[in-house]
Image 1 (cartoon, rainbow, N blue to C red):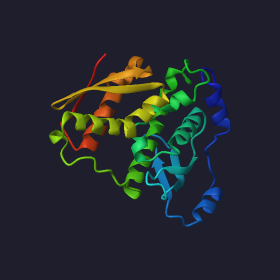
Image 2 (cartoon, rainbow, N blue to C red; image 1 turned 135 degrees about the vertical axis):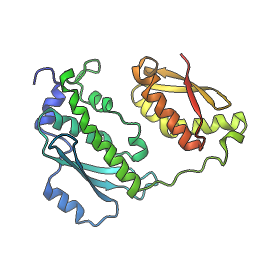
Image 3 (cartoon, helix red, strand yellow; image 1 turned 60 degrees about the vertical axis):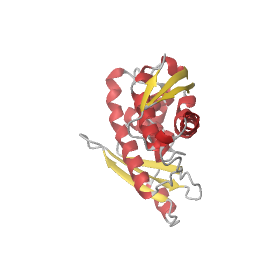
Length: 235
């Protein structure tokens, strides 16, 4: 497989997270309330991916502590699914919201500066719809009790707003950014605008002005209950 990383070649032959019908049967014989199964037929293909595992219900964050998959997919796409499942483990549906296909591509690299597959194989990204299906399933079956932060964000003092924003950043935004060597700082909160500055690797990331910024804004709106909050990035 010319142009593919050794990681992809190895995982295509020996997936790390693949399960079996027998192992699935043994796991589900435990009758644990945290057990789950998600089936996903890949659009415009004959591909089928079945995720199964267990959520740790004793943890208030309700993260997945076991996750395996079954599939009829072969080759590099099998390796992509394997990497994707590995990334999903030990996450809850809030964590999955920050995952993007590029996160999977990065863990499949042999060299951090060299992409793991040729551009013509970008169609593997369609398998990322499995993450969306898993996220929606977990959100419905294992809802997480949200921390009530404030009754009306707009009526808080500027200092109180700052601490609310920092709290949200620490819970939802900073962990995935720091995983890739980045971070962010809240510079100013004025009216309905929150001005941030990216730090580290985030400053040079192409998605920091689009996908990442949209995600930060959606999380802040959700957690503050302020639907008109706008996030601006300062260079």
